[in-house]
Amino acid sequence: MKRLIMARYGEIILKGLNRPVFEDALVKNIKGALRHCGEVNIHKAQANIYIEPADDEKTDEMVEILRHVFGVVSIIVAYEVEKDINAIQAACVEVFESALSSAKTFKVEAKRADKRFPLKSPEICMEVGGYILEHYHNLSVDVHNPEVTVNVDIREDKAYIHTGRIKGAGGMPAGTNGRAMLLLSGGIDSPVAGYMIAKRGVRLEAVHFFSYPYTSDRAKDKVMKLAKILASYTGGMKVHIVPFTDIQLEIRDKCPEEYMTLIMRRFMMQIAQRVAEKRDCKALVTGESIGQVASQTMNALAVTDDAVSMPVFRPVIGNDKEEIVEISRRIGTFETSILPYEDCCTVFTPKHPSTKPIIEKIVSAQEVLDVERLINEAVDGVETLWV
Ligand code: ATP
Ligand code: MG
Image (cartoon, rainbow, N blue to C red; front, side, top):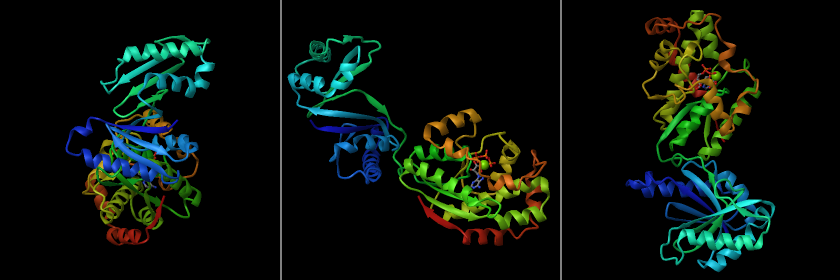
């Protein structure tokens, strides 16, 4: 019996003129994501993308991969059957044998998209349910809380039987909403921020500020590992590693200690903007959240924002840490984010950072530095990696 995967995409977006753009991007992204799974046959019909693996053994692995593809709302692993009630009954008993023979309760759910099919949905449930009961004496029907649900979908061309939907990542296909540059640290917040923006169809690239030898290669590896997890949702990502030590040392030596972090953050934003412009990214993304640390008070955020002209997206700005942690667990970045390697900011943290900074004071404190030269040198020293 033919086993295939059906990936359903959101119907709201389909109403607009963007439908073909959206669908083509999704099909392309799915093909890209599954490129290591051998030959697959893909076609689309009625808000579903049908994926047939040439090698059935790969199906579970493919489902895991598809759960990370933005734009896929839900996934079904189904068996394709002729639109004939006898064939459907026999198939249900055969393919769900292991689930049905070890359960106590079950129900059948039927959906009849093809109204030409002679039996209505409740009749399909009766026919299939009755047949299953004849074959498995261990079972009884429980419509409210069954251990196994056998789904029968009657579609245009064929009938499909399956045991339920798997939740997809949702959102919009990568590449359908432009490009942005994520400031990716090794922490919990910035990978979550990147995920949230990428989920809306935005292609991401990342900049990471690296303070060798104050931060170790292990800290860099950790960031690359986070980037790799994000890339599993975005279909690959460029990471630009920016040498940041010289700038930090200059700030430490020449600027007032209480402004150190904020001046540093202004540099980060400016450098990120430079790299973003080169890479045709139209916005910056950070993991800042109001009040989380001294550099994220309302005043401090205004000082940081003032350094750049590009829009800065801060998708976790209103989230509590706990909420951010919850998302990071769900998307799989948490365990990596909490590895203990130091971040470039923690090494150069003042004892008493200013929490109510005034923009003019920071800008004038920064004037002792040759800002343009420092930025140019940092940008010239960028090392770009692909994950
Ligand atoms: P996170 O958990 O994301 O590291 P944080 O709570 O530690 O955030 P900060 O260190 O103040 O907060 O950083 C705020 C934001 O600045 C981060 O979310 C990230 O977007 C950016 N950022 C901080 N450090 C770096 C870095 N070394 N490289 C790139 N971006 C950084
Ligand atoms: Mg951080």
